[in-house]
Image 1 (spheres, rainbow, N blue to C red):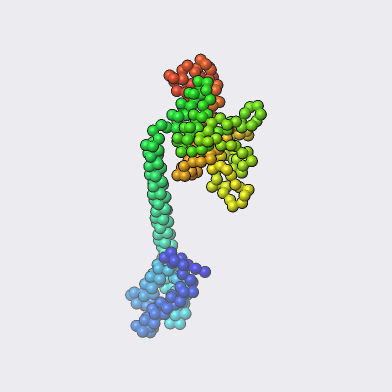
Image 2: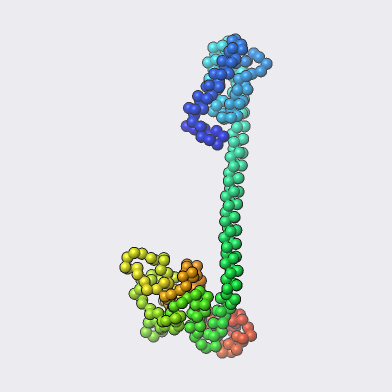
Length: 315
């Protein structure tokens, strides 16, 4: 059994020994001062009450109860009749002081917990502020190095689609400029044979191997897969590509973008996710733009393409 004393665990045996030693010192001192009244009951000042106050406020109600129990033999032996009023009064004081000790320690504990919570939140906010600053620096750097926004490029691509062309090559060239891709190919699933047709290349054309481990993994997970995410030591996981980005329509992969070479500094998960979002956004808008009628296409140079898609298609 342990008692919490000033927020430190103190063994009950150690507590009992300390109380006995303090109590013995008080009784011995009182005995030498007055052999007939070692507890100071008949005097003006109760030394035992001072002792109980100090010991209970410091250790808690357990120390006060132990002190009262230790005082029983002394009271029975030296005082006749037994001073019941003295004993009950000091018992009441122990209960009051013990209650004060309880509330006092509880408030201290609450204050410490609040201080720890505030410090924890402060450290969390400090880290978040640091990451926000880094993110802001990256965004600022991105705008400085890329004067043309991704949204603006996508708008240009949609205008080309609306004019009747299918600029897959234009799209992957934009992706190459944005993300420093050096060699890659885009494949579109043909409507007739179900095979994939190469519609645009960056650098030398890349052959699509549907049995490649990375391609199979991307088709199975229906999301971006790249070499570090599946890198193993066995031959089964070997891949000829650095990343594979499929574009699914329901359960059918209507397009596959395979990356063979990319600038080392740009080869990371964040950039690959941006390429994935770029491809996904592009093919999502292909359907919408293809639904524009010839009467609507003449307004493309005047009005925003998204405005035309949202408002004029239903008419």
